[in-house]
Image 1 (cartoon, rainbow, N blue to C red):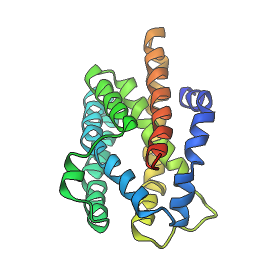
Image 2 (cartoon, rainbow, N blue to C red):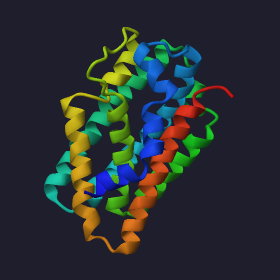
Image 3 (tube, helix red, strand yellow):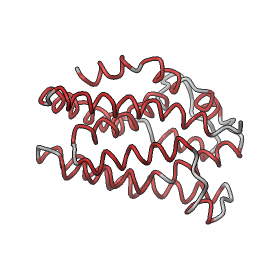
Image 4 (tube, rainbow, N blue to C red):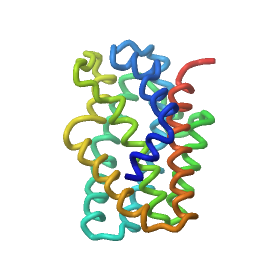
Length: 214
């Protein structure tokens, strides 16, 4: 399957992200408040672009049943996940200006550019590739069957938002969509998908790195 091939192609970077210091610390509930604040402020900047990218996937899906799945998930991102940011940034005493107009870290700018490029391309396969990395890599790090989520409420909820049967089904759907559409592409189309997938994996790792002061 194309999704497996792309995951394997990027295995060293993927595994470095899933096993990142940030992930280990959030699972222990031991992220420093300054690190958690920096991470969530930057991640909050993705909400609008991610919703727009999901909207492009709704429009570009080649099958009505796929369009419905994308649309339902879009509603969840615009609802519960967006609400999480409001509550979490309140709990961390993040000023309004840092929520709406923070200085963007390099990986944040680059990821926003990648999402915007995928959206504006109108290329459904590329949109799905970027969405898949963003969701699958998070499912991977947020799934530790033998570990208990931390008691600290913000860190616990961020884990819970990215695991469980419903989120697993969403990631499985994105994988199925990519595996269905990619074989129908020409060589140039498959190259675009591969490039978008690889860029997204690299940016996920860089985004975790950027949460820590240098």
